[in-house]
Image (cartoon, rainbow, N blue to C red; front, side, top):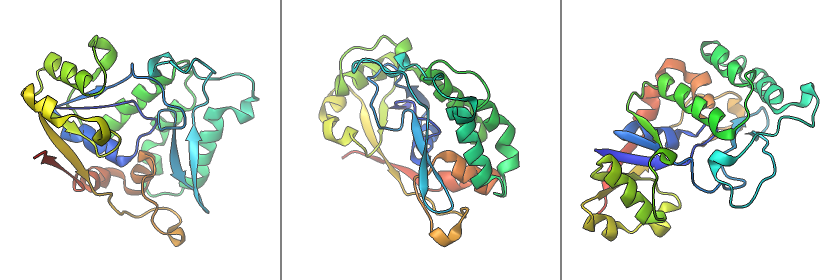
Length: 241
């Protein structure tokens, strides 16, 4: 079994979804410490003059808060300035004329009209939508359900043991700095490195040039049912030597 893991992201970028698609089991690391100014509560869309963040505002909490502890800030602003309304309005303005906006509009609009209290609930709902849109049927688990022990590589070893995985699929991000491949190998776990080449596809506002690493909605609104093939043609795994 190949297992991959990552913190929940808000409307994740394509490399995140590629990792989900390549794994036999994907673990959402909802009980890790929340990282401010990361992608756990925000992501990017393409506007007519630049890229911009879409963000879920959060209540102030402790530095030690886990992702699953974070609460959404829903008060203190007018209905017109509420984060859900502002984001949905931006999507309508900048993607409303995209070829496949209408295909996904109802389900995306629900994200911005349904009441949310916890950040993890909205991100998990979005991940469920994304998995269906891309035809990813393999299972997903929350790390909080596994009662994991240890940190970094020890934590990876623990969840590999508990789910019976023999291959750990790792991204090329920060995990390269701490991942102890030899320790995993001693436990009978092989590391495969994700090798993702960002696809180039038609976007809105072509005069600005192609902007990579937009949130998943950028691909879906522009390419519709072809999005799955565009995404999956861009990823591969390489076994660590």
